[in-house]
Picture 1 (cartoon, one colour):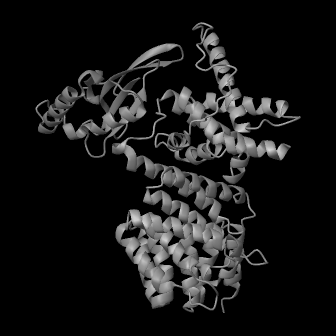
Picture 2: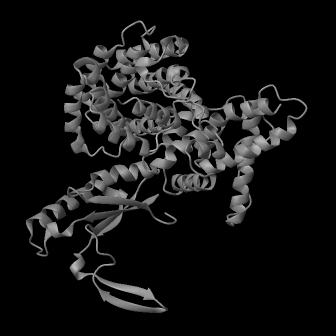
Picture 3: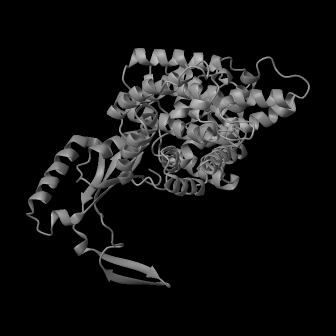
Length: 114
Length: 401
């Protein structure tokens, strides 16, 4: 089965500067984690901060464009992995190894038809 | 005949549903096939029941499962032909024992906590949704929906039908035991035992026994089975003729069920031999210390119990354990000392916790602080205690000078 591991963290800890040491450190950890995953990693990416997010909403038959993320929350979707796992237990084991700030969370969701 | 059928169905339920679910990795399919087999049995066994009812049910349930799979395949246009894995005429002589897998699936941490116990009682003990809804004081429709959601999640999120490996073992076993403990504490709350929880207290004896047989080398499993036995042993002595709760120290040990206590003792002994210090064993050990009392003439085992609570707090410190320790402390060291420690617990915001209010009310009453005691009794009574406890609290409150 294929699972998405959605990473939610408080993005303010990484600031908005690409050279922020906290950001560089976590990116390095993700690179090495991705390598460890090998072929079990089907896809994934890190996302730029929500200050760069734009949201398209559908209402009353028309689509409108807004500045900002879909929802204002304390933690934001900051990246995701798509992984191949035998079952939920394996997906959860992988999720536990994803680099994560204290207070962050990984949501594990099976892909439809995955 | 109906009773014979019911008991045959119930005792076969866990084995057959477990075997089918493990084989087809689909709890819903397994339950549906088993229900269909039971329906056919009710018809086919009208004159005479087969020699081995469970073998008959398993054979028919397997056929039903294959039928259901075929129908689903047709519905999904994946072709009508499904390869039958077993011969249709042959009666299987052996039902693989997959009950442990089934328990681990039902108590998986990915399942909503309020659905785990219900799902376990449904699939492992074969209890009907109406009975479970009654026991959990919820309506049947709501419970049925909760079960449907849980089963969908098991099927569609890929919850494995496997016994967890060593790296997940302790986490997952703990999830199983916590689920069963919460379910049992609901049954135990009802001291009168005449309430809706009474029937499944008996199921918890069976279920904990089953688990202890399946996992004979797990100290915590043995501890849980022992705990249920000690608690159920005392059930006959927990209320008086007026339906009022009797506190442990005032219960007549002559009314306790000695056979259950012996079972508990032997489980506990095996547990301590496997692992000398575990919170669950110490908890069961406290119940064992009480159950050793033979008559009301013997002094209650307060000092022994206090020593056990001290050990327990040292390895598993939480407000509820501390509260229970304070009850014991009051008997060994006096009310003032106990009230002092209780004040320190208040920080843990237990004001809306019934046992906290009941304990403080009792200590204040005995310390002669009447006005404060009344406030706590009223607060405890407002927190909806079970009928027997309510009667006891009201009686104590009326005894305040």
